[in-house]
Each structure stands twice: as structure tokens, then as C-alpha cells.
Image 1 (cartoon, helix red, strand yellow):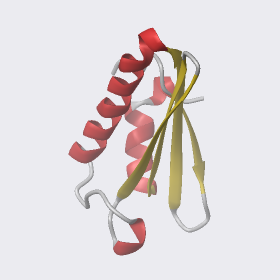
Image 2 (tube, rainbow, N blue to C red):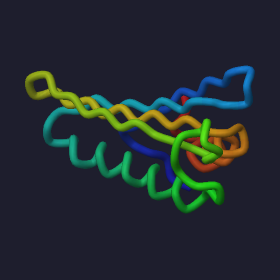
Image 3 (cartoon, rainbow, N blue to C red):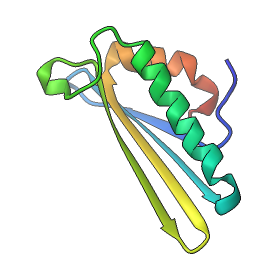
Length: 101
């Protein structure tokens, strides 16, 4: 699979079998739309590859997310945080391996 060009992810795991993939892209205004499109690509993939669905993990869902967008002058930052089960994160690693730090 092709790598993301703007978002770069870091994965952390806790001892309860839950992990977090935090992706960030900081771009100028010209590339902001492409960074947002990558975030959408990740979210579409996550929805398509999670049989237990999207929602709060404590309610039995497989993954959840938080998308933050900020702007400072002409600089735009997109932060996408995915929390999920270890099976979800393993699939995420496999799909987006080239975009992991």
C-alpha cells in the first residue's frame, strides 16, 4: 500500500490491551487540503476494517478517534488520534507501516 505523504503516526500501547495511533501533519495553506484528505483516507479505512465498529472503547467498540485542526498564521496542523484494540492497531500497522515513526 502507498504511504501517506503528510500524516506521520506514532503508536503507543498500554497494559490493558488498548493502543493509540497519533498522527500529525503540519503544512502550509496550500497543502492543508491534502493533509485533511489523508486523515479522511485513514478514517475510511478504519471504518471498513473494523467489524466491531466505531465508538467508545469502554462500550465494546473496536476503535474511536479524535480529529483536531488548528491554524497559526499560514501554518495548519491536522492531528488524528485513533484509539483501538490491539487487533485494530495491528491491522493499522500493517496498512500504514510506511507512515509510522
